[in-house]
Length: 167
Length: 397
Image (tube, rainbow over all chains, first blue to last red):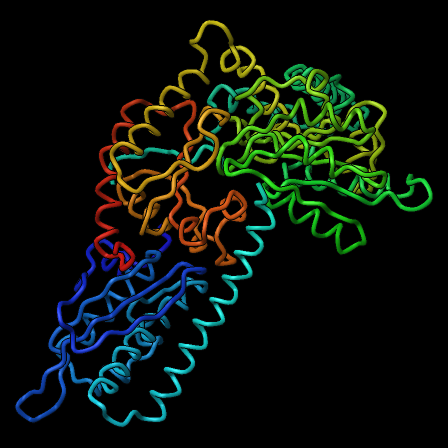
């Protein structure tokens, strides 16, 4: 019996699009150090003949568990070569469906991957000085807020550590 | 996956074939209930008492000081709650309601203490140093007139650090406070004498020492009264009602007998623990030398013969464990991603590791069937695993 599905293990064993991108069009980050997942997504965006914005290249870096790494890898393969519009519509449910089975406590890893992508798209629009949809704006606010909450939780943990560790 | 290298002996151990063999007739032919008057029952009863004698002998206790339970969790719960409930009314001019534990106890002690806290008991969690050692001065100053029990784990299940149990016991005895120790990881690896070490209550478990699951013990020094958690037919001197799990206890006794003969053989330098300690040292030195950004958790010397625990910069422990598993090596981690709570190990945080450091931890625990070639294999594959995971990590700088 294995802990994770075949598809998760495929991406974990052989992750696609790994690394830091030189001169990306934009980048996004999601996650936190307390629960132990940090994901970075880098996008290179160009226009196709019809003038649509295409994700020409995508790279990721993840500090995290098996499912976190597999999720970011899977997501990059889903958006590479696709339009920005398509990428923006991907949800965590789409990732979970592809993996067939994700343990309950790992569902947030799928959300984090989608969040990192959403942040990268936000960053792209911002850099371009273009209007940002209210939906993307709201998502950005939620992700930022969640990071702060976790930081707050982290501070509590640090305090606890100091209390227990007075030597 | 061709290889099967088990390096998680602190989680559980395989049953020694000699133990399994000794247990076998007690399932089918000799199945009696120890409480029955007929010969089936009496045969079981005398085997139970022989087992009790065998096991008591390993820790220098009298047979009547051993209560059999189903698990270390049950023994630890019985020790903490049983003493707390029995002693609560003994306080002078009020309730005696104060219990002292360390911050690196097993969850069953941490949670039993938390439950007692909810019932109105006061719990002090002592500080530990960066190796996880409890300070003797801290024990001494924490004890007050209301204190009824000090409970400190003998050797850490996670980082392997061994506490100065005899000295802590001495302090408790001088102050008239009961002392309990969770010796689940240490029994069989460190010689234990409850009298010489000033221990009033001690927990040990069969399945961490090549015995079966489902058998554990609580040593309770003669004369100490505890309130039982299970009420019923009055087995185990009324301290633990339940039909005795005799096959498991027979196995527990057999494994103790083997331990006495083989593992604790001293002086010759050839005992099982010396062999394992040598392999552990090879593993620790090898990992620290071969992998940059690797650190040892726990005390460098005062540690269990079979425990190695590291943390690696920029990588996450669950990923390491799964990568090792793909190569046939079984290990464990204190990373949050491996726990149901998504919080890093409280033990690693207590010794001062930051969350991201605790996330990068890996525990390898050796045992009776660990071979040198197993250690060589880990030393061959682990540097590559860490290197590859670092390639993916955004934290590498």
